[in-house]
Length: 225
Image (cartoon, rainbow, N blue to C red):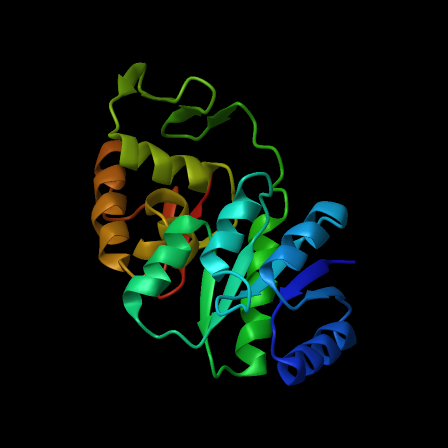
């Protein structure tokens, strides 16, 4: 059962969230302030943290900093703060997602499911992945094609590595942007178009008809060995 630490000081919202989350099979711990949250997280390690920034004893960003000192689980921020600078600060400090109040319960539950999926351990990819066109050595961070090494930029390699470690699976645009560039770049889909085009020119026999680096329009990308 997925354990959620809900850090929120509004009793009515806590009650509504607790009921909805428990109905869907989540185990819920609640904390009304930052210090209680940090103490509870240390005693009962959560799988996901849902955190309000406006807490009575400390700012939620301080709580994120405290948790990120030792805890590597998804943190979803709930906040009435709409300023982009505050959102960026929370994300840069270590939050994984940001939901602005007021919010729809369905939206929060969808974001929660996505956070749990991303945090689930992926199947271990083979150290060397071979295709009919090229070979990727994940351990050595090398790509070989026709007996020679293909030089990739660090960003090209990072994109390729994420895709190769998830063979046959759709990697959403937002996830790929988050993993390669960070949470503040999750809408910059033009970055992906540019870099995938570069990778195809270097690796695909026919870049116009890719066999290995496949685009799923409007959704993401998939690596097919």
